[in-house]
Image (cartoon, one colour):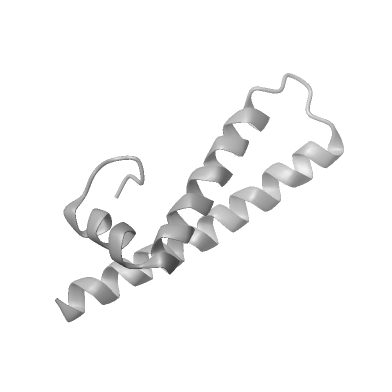
Length: 76
């Protein structure tokens, strides 16, 4: 599932589940920063480390989002 597209289950969870909403916002923020870093012609060492760290954090958050979506789908 693309986090930027509309989905009824995702939309419902964003409205009703603050944890889910926070995770989606974190994911979006990480993606935005990664785009900024990708546009750097010559990233320094700190920026390269930040990029690697953000990719890992973004993946962890995405896994949490999918776990909540899966739990919701199973229970409804």
